[in-house]
Length: 342
Ligand code: 3HC
Image (cartoon, rainbow, N blue to C red):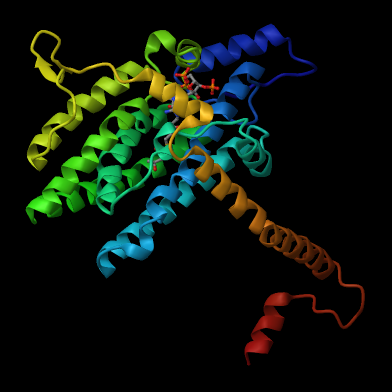
């Protein structure tokens, strides 16, 4: 949205231009005027998303040193590193809204910002790496592909790259489980046991039911969200059932059946009391996840300080180079470099 104005623009004009941009399904960019509530909602969602990517490294990182082969270890390392990258793109997107990574991380550690409920469940076996790839990354893709068209430019552009990588994550998980299903009875049982544990928490990733979701309506009006929580949950169930059949596993839900009339699978209601308990900090691993993040943040303080000092010194050095004060100072660094190379 380009706003050409002279003098102080009237807020109602700016609001109308903002609404017009949203109505055209065009992007809002960081320098555009935006309502304060729109900015705050985005910071909340993008920060929660960034924190989820970073905290999400922990459950699977737990298995890197115990991967069953070099190939599986290389895949898992690459995946966990991708999640770090996703967190950084998202913190950068939040930065364009005026919220720094330091500030957001401090809020996460202080329990003032959330991260996805799914990462508060433990990874009890290596099989969980496959199940997380298939179901958790699968749910993430369902939720995040529509976010590529979200109304805030930097968030939508970050999501495009993230989704490409999430697709790889999902496939590696499914491939791992498929390999195990072709193995021994014990391996097949391990896959089923892992799927039983992760199915319901994966459905909860999409957030509370629409009737109980305070943010959805406004976020849809602003084009931040393009689908409701329940719509995406249904899409995920419809997508996952045939994949489970191909794999040879079942989901732990007696109410799961195809509804010809609706053209969708019916499924039972997730345990929303469990969901809210986890969101409020009382899941199986909440303390462990946040304490680990805090330890890493504290222990990394010297690295951040050193990087900052290096950047400041380099910037000061660059300024000195740009303004030589004596006759012997090189005037053309390219010539100097060529001479040095001789
Ligand atoms: N875990 C923790 N908190 C959740 C949650 C979940 N699964 N779902 C909802 N909540 C919280 C919301 O943040 C909100 O609390 P707040 O107002 O204090 O922030 C409250 O529950 C009510 O929920 P709403 O439905 O009203 O909230 P939203 O409109 O923000 O919708 C959302 C929730 C669907 C998760 C939305 O924020 C979203 O689409 N976010 C972007 C995607 C994201 O963050 N994904 C996290 C997983 S990342 C990941 O999976 C990594 C990958 O590598 C696997």
